[in-house]
Length: 110
Image (cartoon, rainbow, N blue to C red; front, top):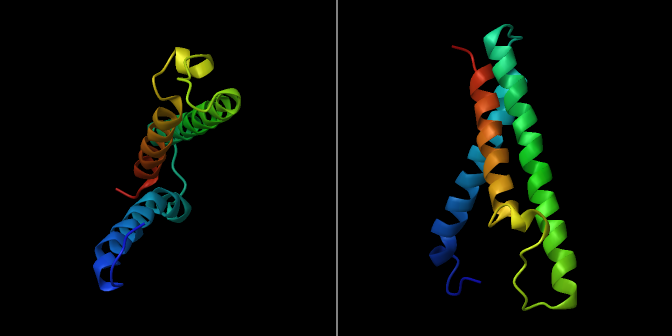
């Protein structure tokens, strides 16, 4: 946790605020967009599907790691989704946020 005066923590708080603002932009863009058809609609639907896949991958990675660490907290987790990906929880989140941004951009007015 940061120490010192509140003013010293201002850059950290501002950075977190900017991060969450940018993470919410695809949702706002999608909600405000006029209906689209054709290639843009297909791209948006594909991106939303990929975002869900990323969410499920991250959740599966976190769940598997939590169960595996119960028996031995210091053990390296190499089974389940970790047998296929080094960090499925982080890679799932990367896919989630990248696809969410792509969906927002596909629906953004040109």
